[in-house]
Image (cartoon, rainbow, N blue to C red):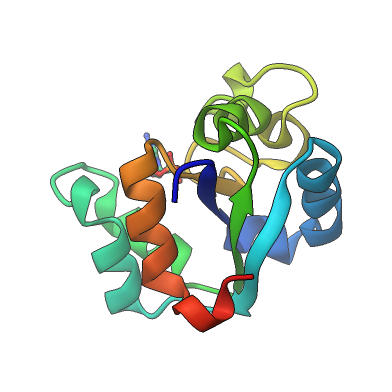
Length: 138
Ligand code: CMP
C-alpha cells in the first residue's frame, strides 16, 4: 500500500462538470489510476468515512454534502503518493490554495472543496479498502 493514495472527486465537482478536468490534472502529474469507480455514499457511509471528524461543528454538513450526489473514488499510485497528491490538490480552503492546484482550479469553498486526498499511508490503505475489494485494484 505504500506509494498509493486514495481520492474522491466530491459531489460539488461532479455537479459542476469537473470530473474530466480533475482526472487530467491527476494523470498529467504522474499518478497512475489503479482503481476507480463512480458511486454514491449513503448517509451511513459518509458518517463512517468521516468518523474522525464526528466532534467537529461541520460534521453534519459534511455528511450531508458528501452523500448528496455521486462521487468518483480512486486509488492512485506514484512515488511519494500521499504527500505529492496533497501538494497537487492544495489547501483545504480553496481561497488559500496555491495557483494551479486542483482546489484552486475547481473547488467552490472550504466545505465543498472538490477533492479528497488521504493524509497518511495508513489512512490511504483504510480508505481504499472502504471502497474497493482486492479484485477491483489493478
Ligand atoms: P477534507 O480535508 O478532504 O476532509 C474533511 C472535510 O471536511 C474537508 O475536506 C471539507 O470538505 C470539510 N471541511 C473542513 N473544514 C470545514 C469547515 N470549516 N466547514 C465545513 N466543512 C469543512
